Length: 543
Ligand SMILES: [Zn+2]
Image 1: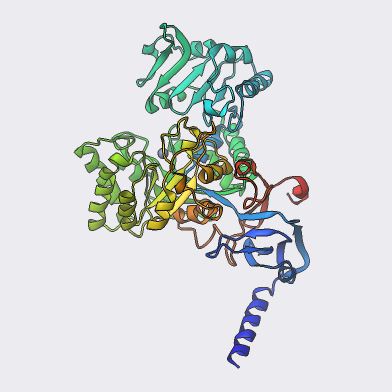
Image 2: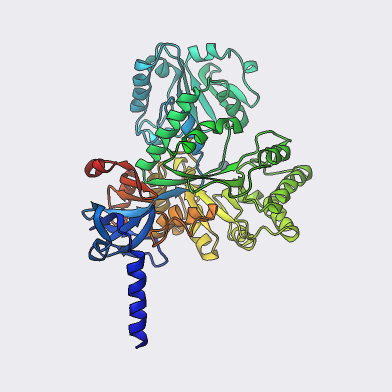
């Protein structure tokens, strides 16, 4: 009797949940739900932007009405929309329609061709800019372009090519336009590169602030170009199955540069959910900056497409990439962190080296005794060589860890994989990502492949493959794992009933293709909140 009652109850629940027919059903596929058991289902139904049901094709067909859109997956694999927990996407969008893109290009010849093509259609005199996202290791030639090659590819337009925050090559016309004739004309931290005989090479080397300041000398895209670039960049992310981004601000991105994003959001044209944090931009005056910028901007403010998520990744300049911060640096940082904690703000902090992370962890531990941060989902970004001890301390503080694939672009095997499996054992929340687009590609499948095989762009395997996750684990890091950082894992990051219908239908089966093909997977159909934002090939009609 009890069983019968339960059955009737369940049946009532199901019929009432389905009293309105699905808007869309996807059937005959392989749906990787990323639920707690990594269930794989055949089909899925969507109603009002959310997932109505997952199950067999026969079950899901029952949710359809006369007007339901039916998408036949024909065996294709569906994953939750991917979420990059640390990508400088807002900045990348601003220049996406005006910069030349070398992401994923496998030869220098093709890279130079892209400059040649842009130069052929550009107005004489306008800049041709490659803003990063590439490394010499990805080219089969294994080298950077020379000034002569850039001039040959672009005879009438100045060219600026940046690699990471370390190296820039320009044409002679570029040097003239920026009035750079000697080291004295360069921002501090940058200098002209010379070869072994002391001759100028046509390139500039520098530290991060030097290269950032150099980039700022270039003309900015117009507002229209920024809006256009933002839309096109998010569509490019959708093409790669991305539906969410944690954006940690960044260099060359003062608050004034968010207007293009806000316009696209206001006009309901955002196709990627963005949670963004505020990066300290004014050295020494960060607290005033944060206080003024957040007076009317509480933690979590926004909607499902665009949401404010606290401070970071550079909270203060003084603690940024500083392995030996002074007591004064730490006192200033402490003041800001305390202020953020008191307001329930999230905070993500860029930190590279485990050897010095004690400075940061000790500070957080002290703060946690005064103003608890355990529930606030603070995090550390990068920290590729995190030790088990550091991860234990992070766990005790409730800190998460965002992991990126910048080592994919490294050129030697002496570096280690970030220990994501150790983090899993210790139960530190981990989000995956790229840190694109200046120092890495934004392609999530490049990052997923690297997480699995630990091989760099040059094909060198890094040590510690024992830290390689399973395919399901890696997918979890890129979905639910990343969703944690914006307090969203109950709303997105897996394909379960009631969650936002963010998903991607893949061009290849992520679970079974050889690992070295994972990097070439694309989406053939991407949905955000049940709305098709990208469709290709057999699904083109649905966009
Ligand atoms: Zn960073």
